[in-house]
Length: 131
Image (cartoon, rainbow, N blue to C red; front, side):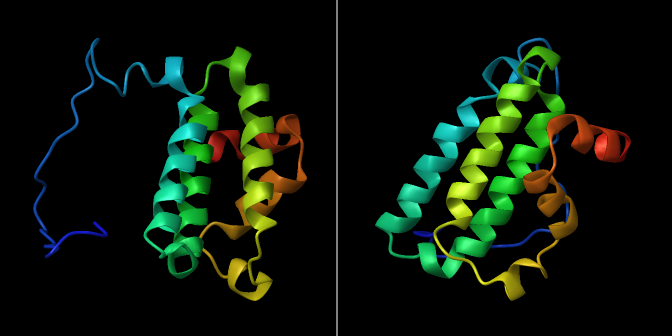
């Protein structure tokens, strides 16, 4: 989108996701850790295009959205490792420098903050039925 000449918004649905045995959505559990490399590539692209500072809060929300979704979708035997990596990646991102006054106003900040400050068991006890 950063290089698009025009962007259009449509109210009607243009694509319906189908989940079948060959669907990427079905096989997401096998590739749950790929998100860390993908989001790093995204960040590098934003830096390359010199728009990272302008979009860093949106990027952080995207990271959190992807990580929180995949944490609940990860196979049970991979949840602990995914949780550790996601927390590490988010903390590294936060260390770059974010204004706490803006952070606290972002959508989903409370659950995001709990994620950073709780262990996996406590986090799941609090949020598993709310996903």
